[in-house]
Image (cartoon, rainbow, N blue to C red; front, side, top):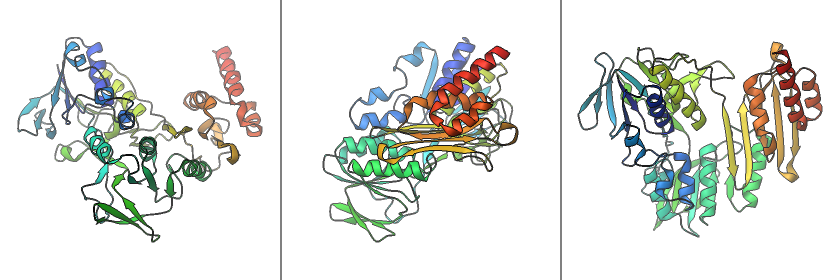
Length: 420
């Protein structure tokens, strides 16, 4: 049985290892399109602050794949012929498969801004990007970071630790707008400003122009920022272009069922490229976060190996450490219409918590939450959301004092154990 996995990020690597464990005799090929061993993009900030070398970003040792009898190829897949079960690679060669996993990940998108293609404008997505950024982002250099979303804030910390003069431009009204509400996002902005970062929210970059040996970044508010380096962190999209003409159903990502199989038998998709089930909403959407990618990789591989494992949906979750201030969001952190919510807001202490409850038969179920500066509750919040435990009288107690969430969890789970 020939298994091929397109994509050598965490999703692809976990899938290959899961396949090998489930089927010791299978022929497994893992394909990555960068000229380095499989690595974690989440480790790039640690590389930029020189806590690790490039090998420290590698997901496994270079000998690991050979020991696991996993054939690793460094190529880009240019097309998929689903009828003939053939892949065509960038050098024109072809590979036959019996079962295929598309784990091709995502790529950064660049906004349509004048000057976005200048030599010292970079994304921070690959190891090559990191090398180019490290060569410019020296102590005292002027750096403009475009985007204060999740990826942008991870890069932000690394840049501050490199000693650059950093300006962050975010078109949204707050930092990390897809993770934090106005209060929490505003607190994070205040925190970064106090740490010496120039943060401009509700601001768009209109042009990037060369100015001598540097650049000038123009904003819609009329500000002009000097920059030796501009980093674009304005979002990602699924890598699906190579699937054109394959017959595989593609929308925002590759459409899959509850086994992570596509509309074509024996072809699966997982990770950033998969339009799969969201635990909280039941809708099928792309969820480009690493925990989802590794979970997808494991489930898809087990189904490829002949087991029947259902994907019940991934919980949308983010945990972010920004210059020592930790924030997180789980599930429907923005709430549901008609659902109750309760918050703690202490801006002087940089502490925030918001609990969101469901409606109708789930009116006493925690469906989402976000916190900032309150790390002790993270595990409990996730457990309550994933278990969908009915809190009963504990809901009203939490509405009075959200910090009692550990008591609520212990009491509710103990009651559930007694029933079972």
